[in-house]
Image (cartoon, rainbow, N blue to C red; front, top):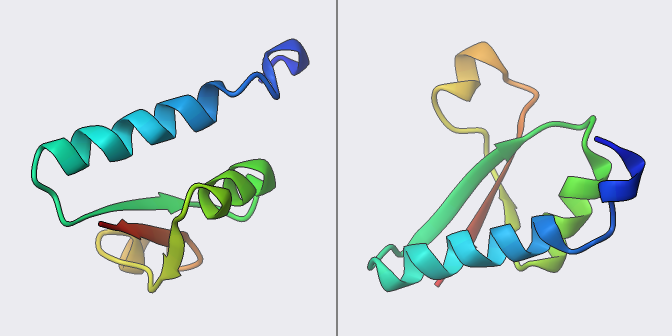
Length: 73
């Protein structure tokens, strides 16, 4: 990512919009998969209310070291 694009709140705004769309659509939770090489993203997910969950399919077989999270309504 271009350094000038960092820390402008775009990722946080997009994450909040996805969560809101899911809530309005009747979802009970939002899940996501990430990796250890994105520490800024991991901090943002935690700050946005996501909590860690076990790795889920299809990542169990293909990317077992994935970091997975959920946001429960």
